[in-house]
Image (cartoon, rainbow, N blue to C red; front, side, top):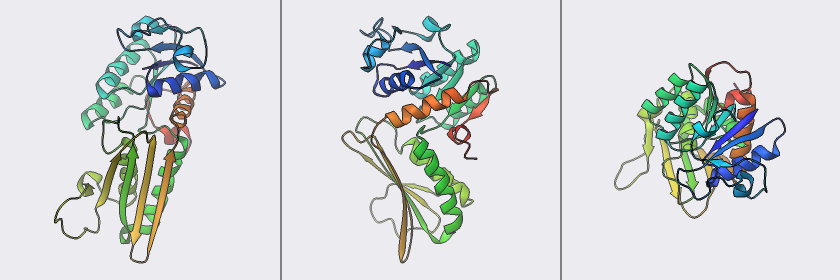
Length: 266
């Protein structure tokens, strides 16, 4: 499986390049950097700090269309949708870790998946996706007697809030409890807000320093509190998950998949 990494000179892109070079069964076929970047033509391995690998950084997907089978995409919602159309037009599979997509953008991605296989997940970490399974189980057992709060922390550069992972955690819990997250979510609290309602799911966000990603879901009632926690100390955990998803897509028919499919957790 030949992989292309878009944003190969970014924080996440460098880990993706490294993970691709360290994983059996996949090769890095292409690396795309920002248009006009001073790194154009540089060896992608040297950009990532792993030494020369013989793949030169290019400016656009069209510059490397024959060099890859699946695109790994941790960019922005608008660019991800452009990339999805490129993948459809050229018969490429697509792994999407981009967060912050709104409902219309998610619908557009789903439409693209009718013509090409796409793995779309707000978090590619194997540990986080196991955590989602645990959350669904806990919510079903604990039911409405327990208050649910989602607390997440990320680095100062993260632009979306709450994180896509936190929202997915809230969605999983809400689905298990038979609720609609859009109706029961409460984002932050300030002032004289009155007592907590029974079925709300609260979200609290922290942005500070270089925190890679921490998520904690509280199930609390009078007398006890259960916390299910995941902490990422390196972006490599997301990169390895994305590479695993890319390899899993080999031979898959068109469709919209997630990491629960990749890890056979459904």
